[in-house]
Each structure stands twice: as structure tokens, then as C-alpha cells.
Image (cartoon, rainbow, N blue to C red):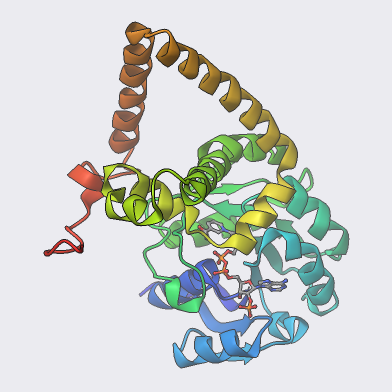
Length: 311
Ligand code: NAP
């Protein structure tokens, strides 16, 4: 077993991401001690029942006391509040990072509170599910997934290397980019797909001519795949939309233009245009499988969910 990388790691927020970190930190022996701080007593009690840490508190400042690594895993809109609460208790030389899905806004909210002598390195593991809360996490969540850092101009290279090593031992591959670029990339690969899913599921839910029970009954024809994304945490995704507004609006404008092109091709019976697009997109999926970011199994590798069809 390798030596722990950190003496004490503080996890601020213990939902899907925080609790997955707790589990992988334990499994890989990455810290001598794990402190867990979360806002509500209920979530804290559940984390204790699950034995995710060694120290439990609802006092964020208490949680980070003496920690060498602090990982903030709360909805991006709460990052500033959390930074303000933990700032006075941060140890000199500690690394503070986050896992937020937007980076420009998190940096703007957190950086002003981080004291000199503490290394603030914003991060984002590109790994998740539609579930939330401490029960949802699992130690393999970050395995073979990318973790993107958006270091600040004065980031200490040694601190960055130590944090990179931490994420590598969690199973991740590391990349760095500037925050603005991160927010644009994520707008297309993550934020737009979720918004489209929320929208399509909302449209189906509002339909008058097709009944809700028909939408559910026949969902395996495609609709079902959108519902997984559209079941994602409403607080998290409200915050993502509000905190990556410019990049999302830019991508939505492009999306609307392309949708109009598709609409025109369908209206005028332009099969060649449709065929060309659908061929190009099929190749994109092949590339994702080749990159090891999806498995090549029919129906997304799902096992049949039921043996007897429900009426
Ligand atoms: P989650 O399962 O809903 O857990 C959220 C955690 O944040 C809980 O501990 C919750 O505390 C705490 N929290 C909620 N509101 C808060 C507030 N106003 N102030 C302080 N703490 C608050 O969320 P998650 O999926 O782990 O997401 C956490 C972060 O990871 C988000 O920034 C998200 O953008 C990012 N992320 C998520 C995914 C994903 O797929 N889910 C992937 C990559 C990155 P209580 O329960 O005690 O209230």
C-alpha cells in the first residue's frame, strides 16, 4: 500500500462527488484522516452511517482546520459562500480545490476569499451520474475519466503536481486549460445536452395529443435516453445554467441555427442532407468508443430492465 499523499483531507459537500471522493480516498489510502463538512444535519448523519470519514461537522470552518487538501463539492452558486466560511480556518500551505462544473464563475466567487499562502487550484472531474446525495457515490466514479484544472496565473507548480497526483490515484487523466476555454468546451459537451434533454422531456410532458402514459410506455424508442440526463439534480443544473450563461447562450444560438437547417431539410425532403449528417454523427460515437469513454454494447450496455412488459 502506498503512503498517503495528504495527512488530512477535508471534503466540503458530501453528495455524489464528495462521497465518491471519500470512498476512493479510503480505498487508495490517500489520506490519514478525512474530515467531512456539509450544510445539513441529515446529510451529515447519513455520511456518518455510511462511514465515509473520520470527522463530521456542519461547521465548514471546523471541517477545514489543519487540512492539507480541501475539496469543495457544492453547487457552483454556493462556492462563494463556502469560500467565505472556510477562509479564516485554512492552514498556510494548504491546497484548496473544487469540482464545480463551471470554472470562470467559481474562480470569481472563491478567489477573493482565499488567503495568501494557500494554493487555490480550480478543478472539474468530468465524471458523474444523474443521482445525488451521499448514497449515490462510488469509488470508481473517476476511473478513466478526465479531470480538468484551470490553474490561475500564479499557481504553484508543485501544488499543481501534488493535486494532479491525487487525481491520478483516483483513476483520472489530467488536463489543464484556461477557465474561459473550459466553460466553452463544457457548454457543448455537457451543458447543452442537459438543456436539450430537460427541454425535450418538458415538451413531451406538456403534449396534449400524445398521452403521458404513451410517452412512458413507448419510451425505449429513444425518449428514455434523454430522461436520464433530464433526471439530473435541479439545483446543480439551475446553478450551471446561471453560472455559464454566456457560453451556453452562444452554443444554444449555434444549436438553433443547425436545428433550423435540419428542419428545412425535412420540410423539403432533402434526404441527402439528412443522410450526410446522420453518417457524420455516427462516426462521432465511434470515436467516443475508441477513446474509451463509452462501451460498445448494444443499448448502452443495459441489461433488460424488465421481463414482463407492464400494461
Ligand atoms: P449533490 O450530490 O447534490 O451534493 C451537494 C452537496 O453540496 C451536499 O453535501 C449539499 O449539502 C451541499 N450543498 C448544497 N447546497 C449548498 C449550499 N447552498 N451551501 C453549502 N452546501 C450546499 O451534488 P454533486 O452532484 O456532488 O455536485 C457537487 C458539485 O460537483 C457541483 O458543483 C457540480 O457542478 C459538480 N459536478 C457534478 C457532477 C455530476 O454529475 N453530478 C459532475 C462533475 C461535477 P446538504 O445535503 O447537507 O444540504
